[in-house]
Length: 484
Image 1: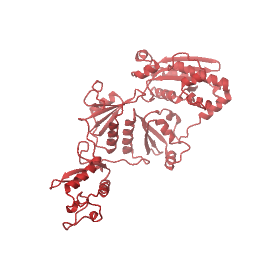
Image 2: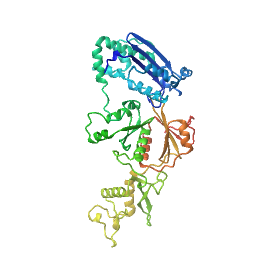
Image 3: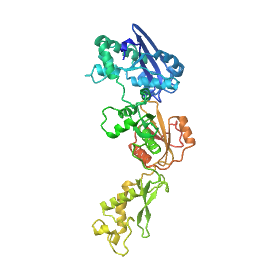
Image 4: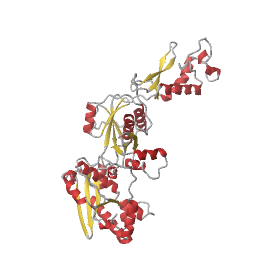
């Protein structure tokens, strides 16, 4: 690879509305061009076409009024592409800036590619004994001159330029080129996977799907650091045979960016059920999902009866106990409970009583039943013991009057998702108000799903701050939003 300093270089910094390259937008671009003895600076504010979050304004000083009359990225795309193409792209945490530009250029119908240099990685390589490598620390450690306000694009691009110039002066071109070769070793990706495609992947929450050469789904996964998790599948030091086999079969990767962990879990569960990927464990399906419900006997006691989700509305039924993927699983679980607590299988309806009246069940003869089968333990006492044990597995009642929407906000982004539910049934997700209006206008009919129930009930119990729950039809934009 030719020396970095034999090529034209652009030092680039962006300010954005958040950290999600697929959903957030650029608000400012700063570029320092360097080739030989020539240095040229260029910067502009960008109208992102969306409100700038207050925390971003606090960080950068850029607010909605400042960008109101600024050009859109689309209007600058062709000119900016000419300015950047054919030059080495240098940025502090280059994946962030390069990923944002790749996505913005893609929206504008342009393909942008460049050799990238990350000065975070370079700082770590050149100063291995240091712990911090953010731009403030790099500037202080190297005595760089801050010319302008920090967290403004051109100011930060100037700092990156100064840093590389100083390293060149103090360490020399050969040492720098050797360090760059070390930090820029190509990622070990499967054949056919374009590294540039991976660069457009967001770093935050999301789900991903691996496909083989025949377009068959291999694996569905999720992560809070999507790009990092996907690349980990192809690390050269893998030790697990399953991971090694999977990495060799992958020929295409797709992903869905989400605002948070709830959306990622819902998306993962939906994709696994829909795609049935070869390397995922199968999830429960509604046609065999079942639960226990008490039904009365003639003497006033009650017995457990197995009911199925395709026959009973699980989200509406108030008295269901346990969720099982099949009749066999439900029956075996109940038998284990009976054995551990000396319950009678005859009384539970799991075995037929003997033909002769007064004959004890086999479990009682073995000392594993307290005698409900022969009246030694009253049936109502037996039922009370069983009910107390099974109560721990009772399905949670739907805690709302009807349909709800859950807004999940990415704290580092403008990205937000609206998840629609009704009696534990997941109806879909919208990532904008327009999409949510469409979803509300024609919500799908969705059955009760054990995996969605588990995901949502766990999140409601945790009451995470980033979830805002609205009982519909309350308007989303009002101040009457009901935070759970």
